[in-house]
Image (cartoon, rainbow, N blue to C red; front, side, top):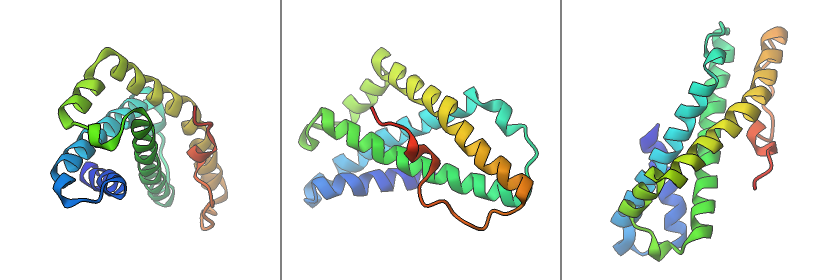
Length: 153
């Protein structure tokens, strides 16, 4: 999934800097940011490991996987937005992005984001998937993802 996320992030960055001369640098930055998203999702799962122990029907598991993919793309878009608010695209450097994510402040941001996701989104997702387990009616898709209801601060 990280390769798909990296490509998704790269395409978002390329919209801001479409010149081919910057492709290698932007792909490397996208890789660093995809790693950051992966760390957030990994920590979120660690904080909510009791959810994974549930026995869900295969149809509900499939929807949970789908919702996780939507969450990862949404989080990737949020990371791009926040990072581009902090610095101009021509100032982005893959090594400094990785160093920033590994710094005390970067690790704290990753952990806090994972906790917010674990504490809030998990409950919304659980309620939706839990209700679908009880009703066995999961054919209608929600127009807005559960995590889109969170305030972005």
